[in-house]
Image (cartoon, rainbow, N blue to C red; front, side, top):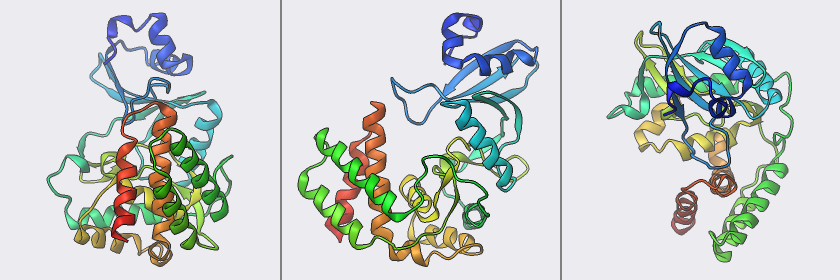
Length: 293
């Protein structure tokens, strides 16, 4: 948590950035508390999200992006996406202020009801069913591009001595064997999981994190949800029934080992590049998949 007494200091300005600080000040209401939110702590990445409490009782979520260009891309994708995201309150440069959604995150529930899981699947399926009018710069647009990134990430993990050569060869060969020739492309979320889904007080289902919105293969997005949100077999069936109201899962299931390898290796590599903890966990899951196979 960042102390409110330092709201005017150079240090807080450095953390928030000039655009986000300007949005906060533009409300004209004193800040009583500002809390940094992050799911991937890193000593080299910006603190990207904050919960802000104001003296008038309002609470907002503040988001700082890596650049104004990235904020522009997310704003355009938000505008094209279904109205399932937290409403945008204000925007400037590399910063956004969003409504704070009161409710319960699905990750906090003892068990997610089947009807809610179907709604979740329906939400992601609707996003994947949208027409994509533009492509985010640098986003992979072919199975070959995704495979080449897998090769680079494996090389990074080998260099970091987090992966043994036998597992790297096995993962690459299995992914290559299941590589699809064509893929469905469009808007993707990249972090659609229980932590980012909230059942609001009015029983609406809201996705409270849109910072990762991008373009790419839909099945790669599904694999990220599989990796980030472990479900029981019956829960998978409920989620899938909602998703398939908009799009078939046949291609994803047929090429699962390709997408799973790309996501797990990519997750470990992201943690290595960010100097963040937890790189061993996705590697262990990769090892288990190939041991089971």
